[in-house]
Image (tube, rainbow, N blue to C red; front, top):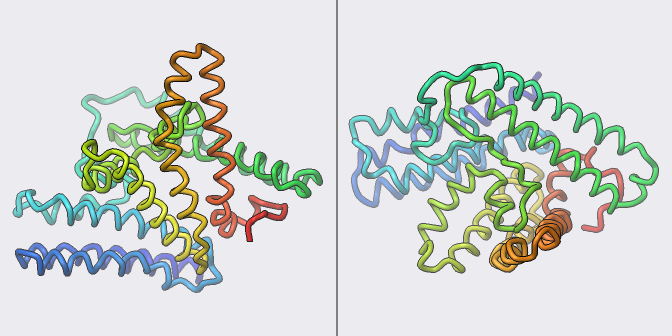
Length: 324
């Protein structure tokens, strides 16, 4: 319980700074107020360091909260200059509420259902998601005890990936159902990413809410469709830097693996046009080849990503990783 108190402290401090951050810009017009507001971004990001380094799980939870707050603060600093000053602070503080999850683009968090829905389909999705997530956790624990899995990293990674996909897809559906039961007009955070036939499609389906934030605050801000290659590569670079910082804050280790993983995805996403043509013109065989190539690429390169995840959840890998 004492350790959990550190988590509450870190999150409380992060939200405290987030609530103060817009005030300089609100009171001071021009670049001075904006500059002071931007200074709060790194302060919020390092709040997980208030938690002792031995508590990796709590640091990771705090980093997730700080990341969510940072996305929303950056969106405010970049786009809210035209919002009516009479309501801007009230709207911003409402925007900070962490529900719907990762709704970091204003005003997506305000989208409500036009009419009440029958709750039972969402209740079934909620319980189905909880069951799927629980099954995934039990499966990875059980399969990790098999001697062959413990001795072969490739098999261990495959087993971990399959259970991870089940876990995050189930969790996404459970959270989406909970949001719709609360009256929000949202779609699941992850939308069947395993069905993707190109790397580009995979990242559109995976964490679509942060995808929307990156599209608005990185892709469009750096030229968008006027300079699509540069903007796309910068999207993955920014995503890689952000993940690298978040995992470093949680684990106190800067490995470069997160940056490498997301940087590799950029050129692969640029090559997605070829896979799309293969899937469209090659019939069923072309679709199978495009889907297989996409899943294989993401699965192999994800070894870099899961190096950081396994530091926080050590039960994921029970064999020796090839990474140092």
